[in-house]
Length: 178
Image (cartoon, rainbow, N blue to C red; front, top):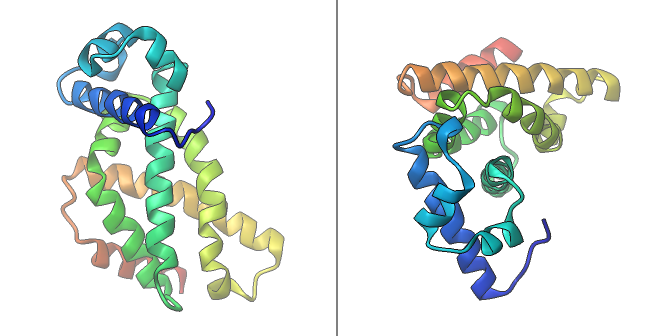
């Protein structure tokens, strides 16, 4: 759907996103309906459909917001090491544990994996200086490896209640890739 700068439209969009997030805390993803979302957000169905076509599109908007936040944090790093990149990435995901809960407990992992791969392929370009010896094709394959590995790492980390600190996991990843 088309983005807007209209403050009223942005407020309604935020209300819908917040209502959806609130519903996921008490209701399994599969049981959440558009009707429940509009009731929780106190907006009309017409308003909902101006902003989103489906629940999946709400998830996509949430994922894009997270991806933009990760990018912003990563870009603020000055000549980051691999470890700093991974620590920043993992810290950000721990801060956004609600989204992981929605995905893992809502059984929509396949949906996320498809979109996550598309988004992360570009985001992982920040690692290019650390893999300068690789050809473009080899680096593309390395990104595929990292996309799958980082996804599964986050899912396992979430399932264990974020037991390890992001820096510990970042050091492990850095050591593994060295």
